[in-house]
Length: 107
Image 1 (tube, rainbow, N blue to C red):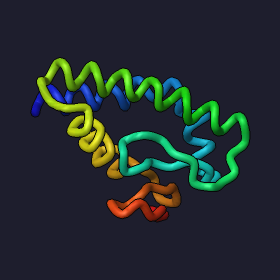
Image 2 (image 1 turned 135 degrees about the horizontal axis):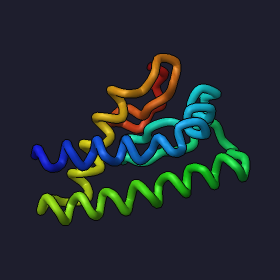
Image 3 (image 1 turned 180 degrees about the horizontal axis):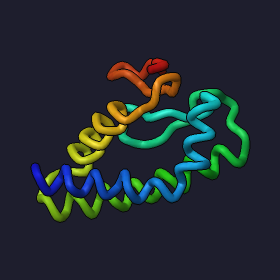
Image 4 (image 1 turned 180 degrees about the vertical axis):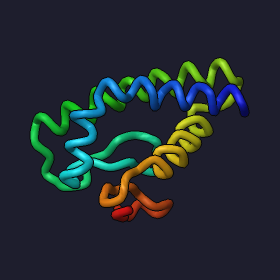
């Protein structure tokens, strides 16, 4: 479990390279943290730029989830769920996240 947490913190740190773009998209309410552990579009239809951002971030997250699951002998679902929990905690006031039933909530 300690390794999972360390890896998830690493993922969050790696995500900072996108922080300006993700941050702006989150502040505008365009994207949020989905209950799957991935970034998702909140306001549809999404622009091509927002869709590309979501796809790029999610590809990186998926790769990290796979690596972490392999390293910690857990499943991708377990890793992505734990990442979601941490991401929701880190979500800034006014930004969106999905609850367990898939409804978007503003923090």
